[in-house]
Image (cartoon, rainbow, N blue to C red; front, side):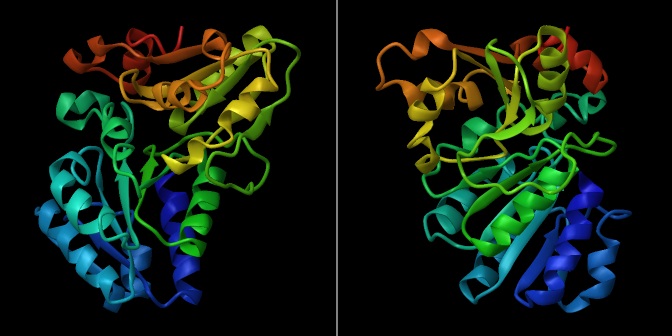
Length: 290
């Protein structure tokens, strides 16, 4: 996803001269194509993520669409006050990009486990979450963000993720994207890099698999109607269940009688917070994969 992100960002920056990229002294070996093509729109803020976010907000207030880029929790939890007060409150076009969502950096331990980021970001009323499940969804999310600049969070995997779509899909907040057709079993609805686990589960039991790479507070509207067209939904996410995607869906359908009983959630157990291991091992320990 990192490569798809930077490749698409360079392409979009060719025709949008207000796109800027600010990094927190990392991403090198990935971000060079943008830095070399647009040196006047690339900044290294150093190991100072809070300053990076404040800088991005200032640039956005002058007309830039700024993408801040760092690993896992560093551009989110470390910058929560700046995101809340400077970006979200003022509705500025800053996209916070976190690479290594979920347990992609599992071997580096809890400081790098991004398993509570949905809970933090979705509590901010103007933030749009973009959690692509494959490189094609990454490109689709970027195109949407550039066409609809606003406070947003782009949560990427790391590298080597398979493509589940044949081409770049059309995305919109709250929309369900078809990934795998299925029978009359429960629908498996994934967000982010948990898409691989959902596809594997769908292949085992014949369920239809769908992806929701874009969601927000406002996107809850209409979810109950879409949900009611199914026989039931199981959500998939590489995040703790508290405050995550499944919780968001429960909130979205809570006002419609009978739907909550048809919703199940596959998320990570808190044991992963205490464990250092590979992403695959942690997803298994956390209960996301068999």
